Length: 250
Image (cartoon, rainbow, N blue to C red; front, side, top):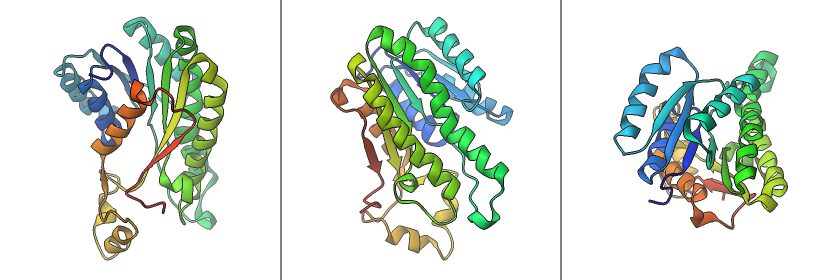
């Protein structure tokens, strides 16, 4: 029980990697506060709350847009009132609107930046106050191997995820003296609803051939990496980017 009675926030946890992270942290004793955005995700969010509570922890879902500053502020204030503290913040919310630059609209660019990058600023700014007060905390930002390497047709996604890396390293330097750590995870190709199309059709083998380990990763494996960074096992690690990509960045 690496996180017994700790309080963890996970944004965008109704499905995929966020859901796996919430479950993994709860399995190790963390109470979970998580967000979802669309009304269509409400049923999945409610089901996740039930599953987390079944693991013996407290859990609550908020419909809140991490890309909106006021909503992020209200959400974090509510969590502090409801749970008493915040020990871990996982900035996981993200979208992609892939297109070649010549076809990308300003609206597509702005949408990706708001959800992927601005959300990290919004949430981190809110959680550092309680973390600094208690002189302990772990902030984990979900970047991407695309933010490290770039990828044709994903300039907005890559820019947002690369921005997260620069933000992470800067915040680690600002908050290290208060024992608040900030790290990033850069997943590669992970099996989720959003990546299923990459494993089908003629291009599937081309993607797989770029991965030395010869397979896509699982959401649970990203949950394991998050657990490490959330717990005291990584107590002397801050400002780092862990590439969980099966060797894709080699």
